[in-house]
Image (tube, rainbow, N blue to C red; front, side, top):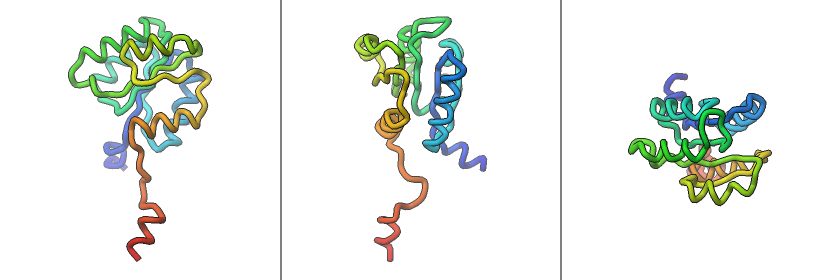
Length: 140
């Protein structure tokens, strides 16, 4: 089980609202990924530096800093620069600022599960955990 956990891709969720965090955690787990959670920008930065997630889902309206400040701090660190960051906000007009501010993409809240799954596939290239039927048939 420990080897599975080590090889499992991780998603850092930086979100201040507990109910929304729970929803995102469930969706990330449903996608076969390991969620990491931070409720502040400072906590998110610490977890990113320590655990090097494969993707960051970022609420732009944090309690301790602006989400774009968080992005700037992440992009300053060489070991974190290549981690894709998907910004989230209830305010659609923040999309342009998020993209110009260094985010790789933007999701408007409430985030639909299908949209989240599409973004995860896009940035993490999710592969099936077991061989597909097509692959299995080709070996027969």
